[in-house]
Image 1 (cartoon, helix red, strand yellow):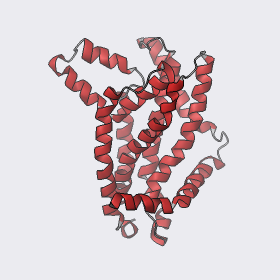
Image 2 (tube, helix red, strand yellow):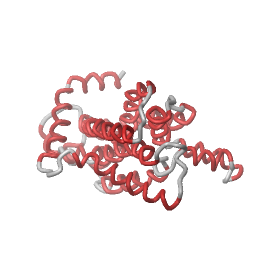
Image 3 (cartoon, one colour):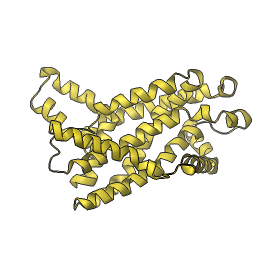
Image 4 (cartoon, rainbow, N blue to C red):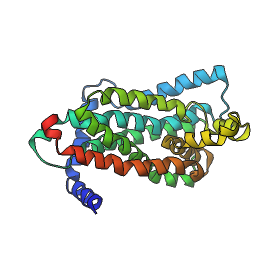
Length: 274
């Protein structure tokens, strides 16, 4: 019941959420010479680097042009990584507002995620242009996209809420957490496709009797299921693979209420500590 009340309270302050999100977007690009081009620079540069690496190590992309495959993976990854980096510092960066007036403090981590939704949409347009270059068209499976975006937002919030609260008390969190999140890139099918991991652990049983357990542990990373689902619906004309997604989803929906509860418990002292 308290969760319902919290959601209703946030809805009352929805105009504040949109105002803060718009302010963050405007401030980020207002004095940037390249403007919104910075939004796509990171995934494009990473795509080019990974494509160059692939020319040396020969990663099988399953018949899909490798630049398209990896750029599709980078869209949700960049959303998550930058959404966490921005969300963790969101309360501290808005210390003046926290001290002056009352409103639900979870507005700040939520605003950080909504800001990234705009950039997510820009990256989708770039992906559409890249797919058109290679003569690829999405199918009706693209209708899964809003649901996947909602799941990606919840995954990001599961980290943001706890991270933002802890960062008020321990400022090292804003330095350590983004670094730790960056390492998760190598445990996600971005540089390599998920099929490579399946071939190694489920077919070749490279880790022996521990192979299936290791694969399950790998899929507990929510980004594994999210990235694979994005590639399925946009590139392979397939629905999301729920057999791959459910371990990560189970983790997200277990952690999210705990993260929110921690945030609300620590929220009462924000104005004193910050």
